[in-house]
Amino acid sequence: MQPQKVEKGLTDINGCLVNYLENVLDKDSSLFQPDLRSHFYELDALTNGFAPASLIALASRPGMGKSSFALTIAENVARYGNKSVAFFSLNRSRAKLVRQLISQKTNIEVARITTSRVTEKENQQLIKAIALYKSLPLFICDAPNITVESIREEVLNLQQSYQQKNLGLIVIDSLQLIQENICINRIEQLSKIVRHLKILAREFNVPILMLSEINQVVNSRMNKRPRLTDVSDCGSIEDIADLVLMIYRENYYDCFEAEREIAELIVAKHRNGAIVTIQLLYESDFKRFRNICRR
Image (cartoon, rainbow, N blue to C red; front, side, top):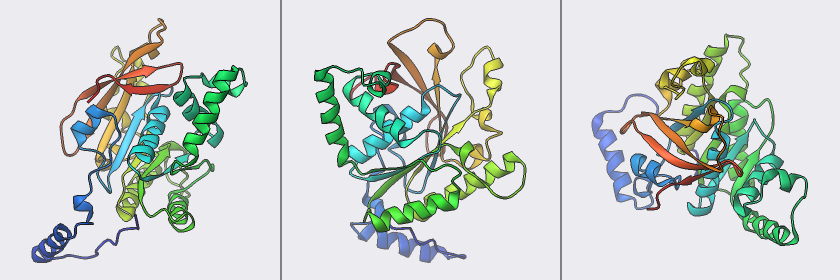
């Protein structure tokens, strides 16, 4: 998708209505395009997908699995949505992301893939998984010290160099690792970055999925489920983000181990809908989230 031209200045309501009518009559208009599906069914049913130009925050304490959840959404969009995805991984290298994708696809633990402790049969599974991912329109940048402007330049380069005109989603992991050169306090820096990411989402007219850590004060509470106020020191997420999702896993704090467990996806802010908690299946061996109920 090409960057969207943003009209400047005040426009009377008649002009707005004429523009809207033109879009309605244009069958290729984004008004006729369904919002982007995550393929987590309850989330899609609630949000009707990720809307163009929206800023979605995915927040949790470290170790809850937000990077894995975002990676699964990126794969789903690229595979089932026929859209290209720009994934900016400031947290992990390309190699680690690829290993995790292959682990999730083959049911072979990442540790065994990394150390090549696989059987001949599993080796054939790895080869098939690699072949499956080769044609996926998923583009990964793991450059450190990246800025919002360099993210913009990379996305423009993606569209021009790879002829990827159908950009569907931008993923950024994570907010706290984006650089801002202006010497102001960190909260003001993060607020400025969040505002610029929202502008970027509008410019390219695609949703941006932005990952964020949350305040460690949550660990001092009896009920450790995150709340919207836990991102209050993470810039202006509360005010600017259109959708705020939070991941919570009870197993993270309890001592018992389980191969499978229930994870909670807390919809902490939803500009266009209800505030609810969605249950997902989490498989810790593969760091994989799955739907509990099929459609």
